[in-house]
Length: 514
Image (cartoon, rainbow, N blue to C red; front, side, top):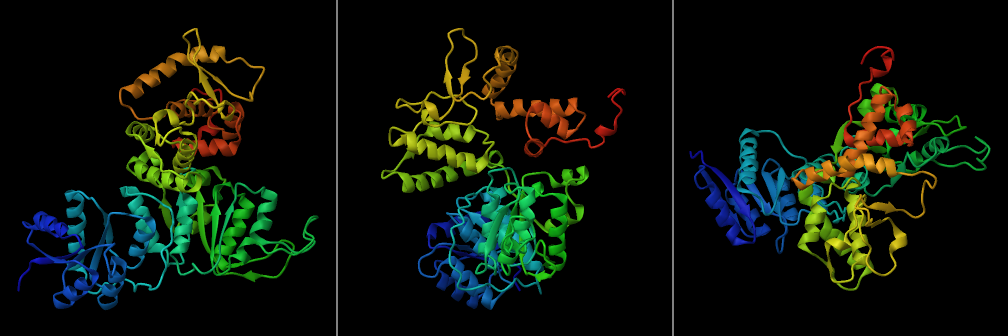
């Protein structure tokens, strides 16, 4: 009996199969071909392969339909999907329907071999392990999550694997990375998609009102409670509740959330009757909950209840290969919403966008593209049309000056001054600060010109944060006062820059050497 392994390539482009044969011809692997979903099913019935690599989009029976039929007849057969599009919805559906993995065209030979050899080993070892049955008849949903990077591939795979479970999910990532989109994708591809999805931003609602928003209240529970009101937990019964910015929730409210997760029961404010609900919780935060546990501002037991499945969204600066695809998507979106003519982007403008560190992540990129589409004077976006946060740019003619800061070139040869309207502080001069920061600025600019990729603004802000925290020996409340920001803002900045705090620093006697 031959010990050669067999893979079946399903793709309507015939030259793809030739490429696969060249890659694996020396590896004791037979490569067979099918050019449609129907041909693939017939080939599998004739001679079962060890592995199937199948294109997602084909005429007639597409890859998703063929995948469902393959797994309906043989759940143990490993299928890897291939696609040139890589939309989040299609990838998530493929993973949910039992695809072992997926590859986005064009892929490198190294990546192809890595994925194929791993899958073949699993196929050889898998005697009794079966995948879950696929669900049929689901519609395609546009999640608008764009990404072909390895980091986003892992995010899509996780969504597909956990969507149909009841597990709580904790989504972490910086502001603007798209945490709510991920939560909605999990909901959309779950078996709760027909039930409510309710999102609540815990940081946007005053603490005094948050408990009422979540659990509701009885008439007369407090002065303004003139009627009984159902809370978000009741409204989301049988569905999904998304708790955004959960790190901003107070400890008493955290305790009540923990009780619902443990027992599925709660009481309205001012009420005595227990209310039972079946709600799946998805939470998100841009704060370091582990550090908050050490700081005593987040419950350890609630953290472990929420962190059953964790989805970590990478910042945009760590997945720069996704930026062109995001730009293309946002351009199409903005042209459709605001313009009758198509808008292109020049290669130099694309290069400028790819080099930026995007402290505001995907949200900042979308706003930048929207601004460029609305203000460009031609059919092509040029570098001069792109206004980046923290950079001074001359506005085009047409009276756009009042919309933001303008950099004006001084006659003295010093750094450009930023003229902001209205002025936030009118009775303070920054001339001394400007003179002192000039050599630091020149040092950072020189480092960028030598090819170092960082945001000058971020480096300066991080240095201020670290200095203030060192001055206050880690006391965040005092540091926030010195910096003139709220404690919540300080925590978000600490998380954003990955600043490591020594929680014991506050126990040091100020008279001791440090």
